Length: 69
Image 1 (tube, rainbow, N blue to C red):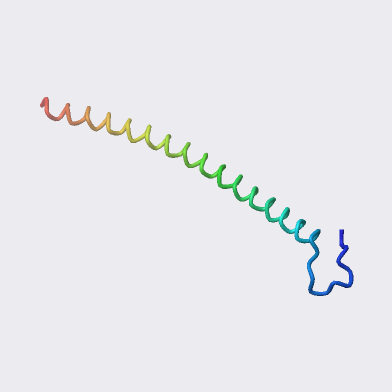
Image 2 (cartoon, one colour):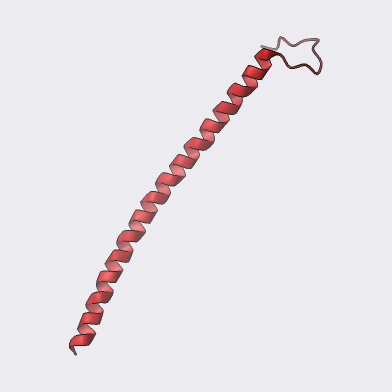
């Protein structure tokens, strides 16, 4: 893999390809982490929306009871 002996300061095509492959691998890791975080945030948002909907329903019932007095 290290065929650039004697080529001080010169990067061989093989080394460039290895570096690009490593960069691509790192980018895929970042994208996967972001996808996981987005998925988690979507689940939390959905849960919060349900809670807010339930609270609004409760508030309406409480207001209805106050108006009936």
